[in-house]
Amino acid sequence: MRISEVNRILGKVDELTEAEGTVTTNYVVGESVKVINGPFNGFNGIIEEVNEEKKKLK
Image 1 (cartoon, rainbow, N blue to C red):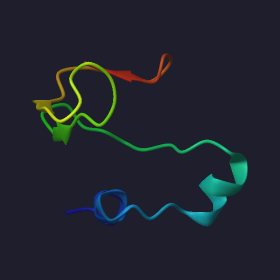
Image 2: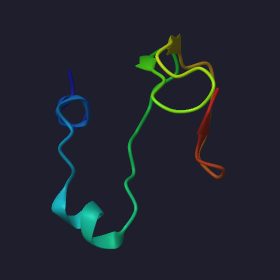
Image 3: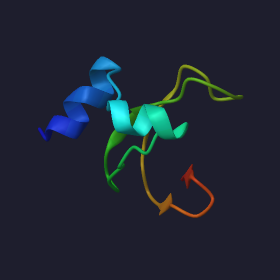
């Protein structure tokens, strides 16, 4: 695992990112994620597409 993945799982955020006010997390197509907000809250999914501009995952 990459250190960025470990930090994301553990809920740690880089101080520089936190100071900017936005959190940038790199997601990879094929990665498994758990939905924590919205109508699919509690479901697990696999990332099919990453839209960096709109900050959305599909």
